[in-house]
Length: 77
Image (cartoon, rainbow, N blue to C red; front, side):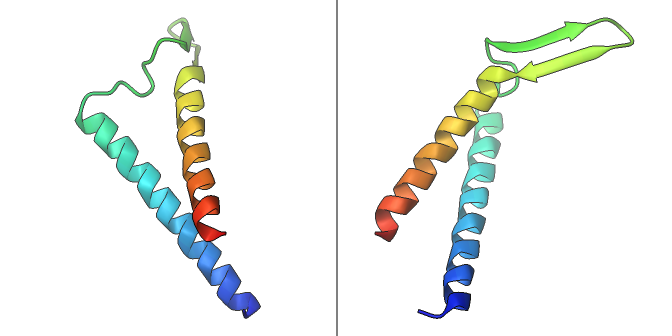
């Protein structure tokens, strides 16, 4: 296959994955799943300084991305 065809295919796959992730986040917000407010998401500070560490949300999204990439790799073989 042509090198440009390979690049185009991977760009299309990346776009589909990004669209899927966006749709999942939109559905989560629509159904009231509290992404960003899960247990394990840390918020602390005072009125002039705030720190927000969404550890649990990042782990959840990372797991979903890993599953999508795994499925795409399995289907492309």
